Image (cartoon, rainbow, N blue to C red):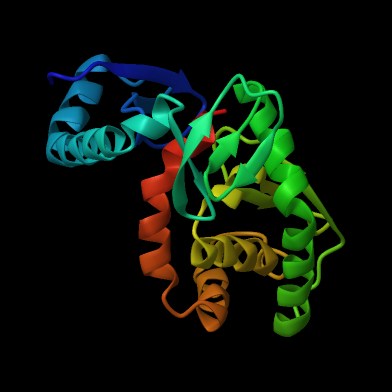
Length: 213
């Protein structure tokens, strides 16, 4: 293969291949799995890897201004990002911060309160109950629901379009009823978000955001 692939061996029963948003390719193998067999598996998956890498390259190129911190998404809209400003603010002219590290604080102070109220409203309307809610910073996910039905959301979802934010809210609320990704879980998601499959696909276009800021 023409791509560099990281091989990771661990106590697992099957092979798993992933391509990150930045095109880091990882093949996870069971302990004792030969490198020759791993190479054959990679060759069999070469078409899928090529397609995924090219899609990521196109996405990263299109969002080069976001990755270079010249622009930033706010509720799905791309605005100019100004750094080294005396005061942090989000306006129609752009996003102003003292440093990149201040983005989380600015987004949380600007949107968290309304977002929590929205989660409560969606929970009431759907009949899905949760215990607590927190806004955090994650590098690989948009939200989670623990065994005690406490929800946590990545503050970077405030950068996403409204309909995708709604899908993530419903997704995590559905985990309060189904702590898995079974067919029953997805049927529940579909009940409240009939076009969830399309939104899931659209969400992948923003997955690189989780590694920024």
